[in-house]
Image (cartoon, rainbow over all chains, first blue to last red; front, side):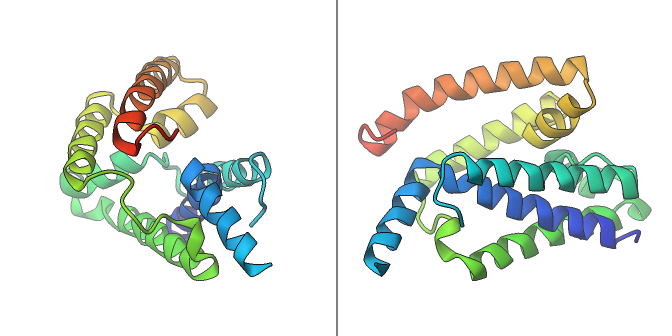
Length: 39
Length: 144
């Protein structure tokens, strides 16, 4: 637990940042472009 | 990934908050990333393991996200690299001077109702919004 907790915490932190960052204008644009090309 | 400007930050924020809560509950530590990194060089050797584990988790989380959805992370620099280096230096000086960064003051400090964190967040958010409004049009040709 001594190292597992900070490891899991860091992992969640990075995924949270990445998911929240999806709404940055350039990322939303990239997502929409990709979704359009996949359709 | 949800194609929504509300769901993504909501879900991401819940994950970040859960991460901070987990570290505080199970480890009794504050999830302030700049402090965790800074402590690697200043803390005694027996206080470095959890810091390295947290930073390894950060790297693993980024890698997992990249593997799951490559578009989730930017692949190109949003600005010329000297500007990014300068920005990083300014953030580094600022966060060490304020004794914390967006995670330490913004996530954990506000969550703990710390007055000095509230002051720090108000100052760096105001300055950041102003700098973004001035710099982004200059760097990205008017896009915002």
